Length: 76
Image (cartoon, rainbow, N blue to C red; front, side, top):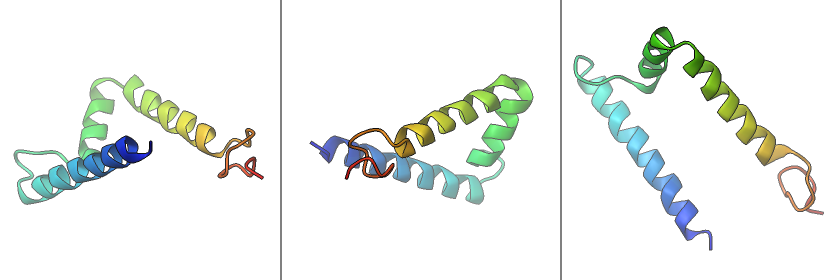
């Protein structure tokens, strides 16, 4: 039941790690995540707000005290 989510998270971490290492080794060919966000924000400023909105929605989802949420003290 949790296996697909665990695999997805590990793939996302590996993706991030590979491209960050490539960006540090070859800064002329690859951007770090920070550089990408800055460049995307300079091109389309609303993108930074949308990324923040997404992060805020996830934070509220994870920590809101709804019934059954062990992180939000709703799990008993």
